[in-house]
Image (tube, rainbow, N blue to C red; front, top):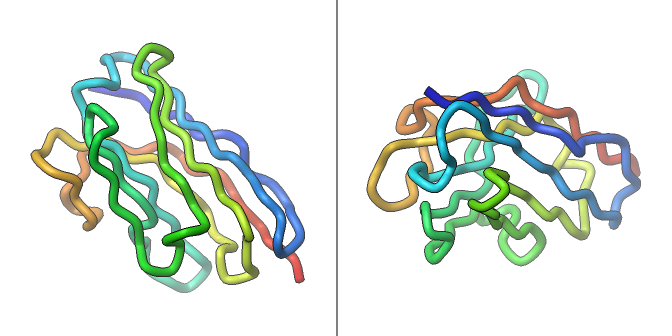
Length: 124
């Protein structure tokens, strides 16, 4: 089993940037496909970005394509999400998730583990 802890959230103005981190413990991260999901108040959790175990394959939601970058450092057992050109609609709790799957799943039920989340608030 893997434990995930997100950090790096906060309050930022529209157009600004934030970098989220997800530290893993318990198991080596390199054996998992990883993803970032987010959940805004009153909405369902939605896929943001995913990355294969090697980092060679990535997938993004249309809403963040070109603005967000997902990457991982398996040596540090850490996943990252670089968020640029932030918009007010990016405001949500962001969750790091891990999956033992082939490919890069984009649906939450394919993921086996997730952290407690980190709040990102983008002000206008």
